[in-house]
Amino acid sequence: MSDSPLLRRAAAVAVCSVLTLAGTAATGASAAELQQVSRVDLGRYAGTWYQIAAVPQLFEVQCKKNVRAQYRPKSDGSVGVRNTCTTWWGSTSEVNGAARALDASNTRLNVSFVPRPGGGFVHSGDANYVVVGLAADYSWAAVTNDERSAGFLLSRAPSLGSGESAAAVAAFTDAGVDPCGLRLTRQDGGVTRTASLCS
Picture (tube, rainbow, N blue to C red):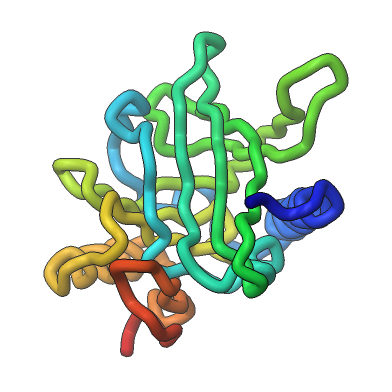
């Protein structure tokens, strides 16, 4: 069961608002100073990711648990994005968009949920999705943006072991992101309470 078109539209608008604010927020740190992984294989990165923890964002306010992202490479070089979660009312919230790599390393991307007339999505040069930590086997990823105002810890499974969590915390710290600002995300088969990633 899915939310109404009105709720999906509201979620998309919230996403756009947050990304716009993130793009204009200044921290005094340039993109060149943001430590990121050397390269991302978008083919290996594709598939389902479970959100283990995140800096709270307006576009997830309707989500109670089970926040997930599905990435699918497309023929035009972009990556299809499908974000879902279980809402506080027990229904499923869904928003669709696309990501475009901003450099050959595929570590800095622009994710957009703004539809383009005639098809596709409106993209900018802002790196609102920067991979700053990635397991060698692509089992977890640490993601932020150029302004370090966002943070997402993603995993291929609903839960993450202590060793992997420690590695992700180190990746966020090395990138200049306070890992304690991320809150655990409730997942069926994972954590059932929300708390700081540092707790």
